[in-house]
Length: 176
Image 1 (cartoon, helix red, strand yellow):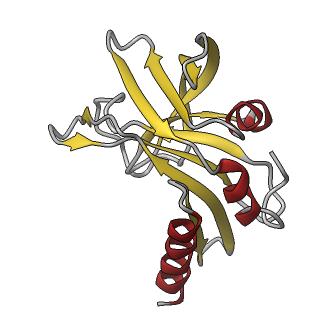
Image 2 (cartoon, one colour; image 1 turned 180 degrees about the vertical axis):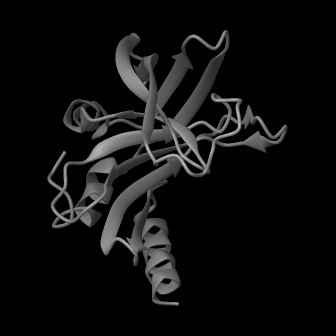
């Protein structure tokens, strides 16, 4: 119940700020940890391995108080195999090349790590500061991921308001 109240309050605060970013705290009572994250949805849907349309989302998160922030994009469609739920979370699968375009400027390429867990598939980068710096005053970022899967996937995120949204992570994560 308390977790739901925190999530609702965070969503209301994001809506008031006029930003696409949502703030959330995810508590793991078993491990005794809390993950802190900002999240925005893509305006482009991808067809998932389940055959349904999904909107990827991007997160800037840290998995513990005072932790290093990192970016994660959940794509829902990249790893088309069933994932064994007994595997440990966050298994690195492969290096992925990510094409990034911020506010229509020329593309640049970054290396991200493919990760997967029992419910989500995505890519991560621990170079949070570099991307956060590019996105602080931006309004849109487009990303294309391609790897050894024979497909590429696109996402477009409204990132306006990131600078203000970062204040919600202040005190929880090291500043990106």
